[in-house]
Image (cartoon, rainbow, N blue to C red; front, side, top):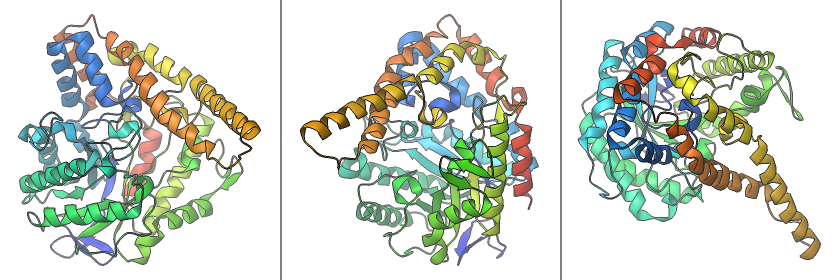
Length: 469
């Protein structure tokens, strides 16, 4: 493998050959997410609950065995077989840095990344390193390991400087490693304005380039990687822009082509949505990478519902559009407990059996916003509470201008995904209370190691076709 270089709208290797970075995201591994491995809330909350319920020794075994089993060489071998050329690895800053020792970066954070890169070398797959959870939280979502639904990152130089220092530390480690395609500086930023994001990108890239001028730097748009207007004109000769392209057709459709609410979705609609999202990048004739997209499935891994089949058709059209416009892309996500993954644990595995009561509770209450899609008992109660506020304001103050939709969303982030999910986190941890260290290790191995997982063949077939076209 050789270092990659941006050349106009293309990414090329050192021989001048065009390279298309296409594959999967390893979501839920080095940055854990609730719907991917089945717990409620944010990673830091569930780690605290596991430690409190199981004790220090079993806590260490729980997470080390989960990480050891979740991604192994078998996963890379499989991805090579279906034609993947790239893997995006989201990681949490906590693997490198303790909040009580800010700025002191630990080499232990490279353990799993280095191991993955060695497997990637064996199977000729490029790695993109993605900072998914930053100190101070770059967005309000649980996926940035945010248990509070608030973002402190944008108004605090302390957090911004820590991330700059972390990327310099990582660049120093990988500066001579061509298997790493590049650095995805910040996942789904949600800055209060584009000027803050522009300044931060310039500062970080300048610092990285003092150490490493070989690797591509991937930057995302604002508002969860959707808005690019207002960013600086391309100012680095090895810069790639990354958008995230989730759609109502791949997440909520019952029929496709067909209506989702009052929107008619078909391939032409999908293409129009893509072009609106990525127009700024395409107009600047720079490489465009769809860092995240994907479909949600409600049926079992071998028995998709009719709605699952419709969303799969929408995903197939989306991939054809990406390839038509020569996009680089990585689907979200590779492995999970049954929501989106190409491979998933068997339903009768020990892990899946133990978390089933918690999974059913989360589903009923609507605690995982990604899978509940805005529904569930508590989502309804939240909406009714906001409606009560709106009614009182209209009657007493005679005002009709406030954004109650945003309030409902904010309450969902802070109350449901945050406070209530964290409150229930001990219930997940308690499911493993009776297990020994050896039993925990075996449980994770049997659930998550590739050789023990089941494949979502209907999804793999669609992806394999897109990867090989």
